[in-house]
Length: 504
Ligand SMILES: [Zn+2]
Image (cartoon, rainbow, N blue to C red; front, side):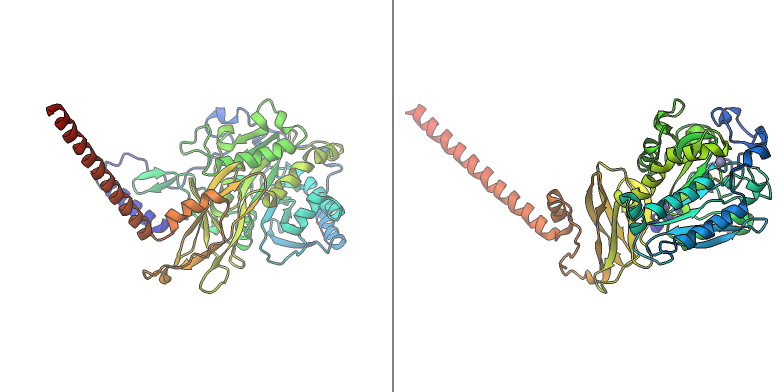
């Protein structure tokens, strides 16, 4: 249906284009802002963001940090020590051939379950090593505590947590921001902010409009991430950076490349998630520079080709960019403190996949099987896909509101239900009826998705036979007609009798 609407829109725009002069510039794929390019004001608050403006950290500073070989050994040792709840795998190799190792933590690692998945990625920029250190500490802390700490237990039992401590081992080994090909990996993702649409340059949610998906143009580290998102359905994620202390959320770029607040369809959800991180952090939310310790990416400084926006648009994954340390490369002796400052935030963010949002499964009525359909929320232009295997979906949303959630699948009648989302997560399963079953017969709805009394009335009028509603309206109108006639008749009789009395 969305596709059909899209085709109509396309034809409409094409028709307009035919009559309009070519006033809009044809740009197609937007230019990336390179370090040092563009408006100097973009750099205003982006203190340590561009490698060219900085000196490389001294060798002295690397003392106490894990080398790439140390990290690999630490990850292998971890999965041996915690083999019950973890596994080690690689998603590819860096330019210099270093494996991009991932630890998966779950009570059933490597298995597909009807559970959400979360990923943490560190060291996207080679000279920001705090994230890779903290991620190893996170894995070890969960392993040491999951039998006694409720939050760790909740994560192990209900989430598949994937941890990639270093996306850029080559950059790390030479203490440089970019990878071995001197490319900034957080500018290397296909950029979908500005595309040519007919005669217009238009901002599009490109899950309807795939563009520039050519993997041969990407760096191997970027390709690995893109392929990873095709294999695993991640609900949310975060990348750990350094150089500031703030939780950054989409969009990262604007249409005109200027700096201003530019919210994505899930702006409220992202603000909630970013705030969850900053408020759980020891001091992030006390920031003087960023209110509540959170920021919209574009309002801070626009970037293009970033991992965060790509995740949301193409991966169905709600990603935050977390700046976890003002100092990009602090002394190793500070790491235990930085870990303690971030520990709760890191755990709470993963646990939010279970503790909040709307979750459920979609089934078909005819076969009773899981139906990997789509889930939409009224007023939010974003689609969440149910998993191919179990048709489970996990829709993160800002708590404290009523949402109209619709499940759909080709060949089935979409079903909508209203959900009051409080502080805790809500389960809403859907059973969809095949379109073919509608042959004028009234089918009994088997949707087990009622949540509260007010909905029953709404559903009665929206989902039951429209003919009954029509008949009720006709009966009420007829009664009103009879009543009106009777009143007129009485009035006429009264006038007659008063006339008679005055005559007499
Ligand atoms: Zn960074």
